[in-house]
Image (cartoon, rainbow, N blue to C red; front, side, top):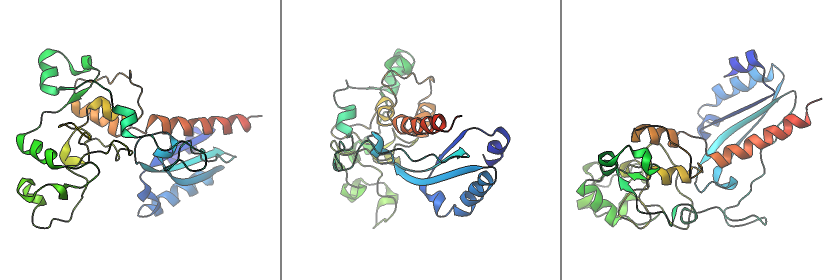
Length: 253
């Protein structure tokens, strides 16, 4: 990326990545900042919370903004966790996905037509064992709420690993980080708050603040989940893009 910045020399640079880049990846990050700095860019680095910008999701990202000869400030939050500072509180799962009709399973969609015809309001079919685990899962809690007899073998005998799997979202909280595994119960707290299913592909997209009518142009559920989970949340991207646009206009002679 540093090479591209030096060759193309855009007016503004924006990069986002995992927060760990500022810690374990610090040598690489510092090298990047040094290289673009030597080319006249003034970088600004911070870890931002997507929920502070209207995204109903707990998603922290490291953001780098740099102007060619000028600084670009980080965007001002539009929301706050508890409605502090005269800002509206974080948007919740309930606000975002409640009221949608029941989704169809991938098998049903394939039997009828391509999944996209259903606006990707599609869920995967679950095995009976997974369905039982979800039945015992409590919103916002870990897999430890599931009786040991119903847990996968790898989660028995005082297992102390990743605790978000086989869990449900909470209606009145932000969603956990949406990943490419967003429709698979074993890959995160992606269970619907009250229904016996995971969230659908479309619900995952809404929690990433994709527009409701955004066309996910693929017949593959794996590809659809990859597009959604790897995306920079739209509302978050919009806030940062506006800040870059304002700074460019202010520094254009």
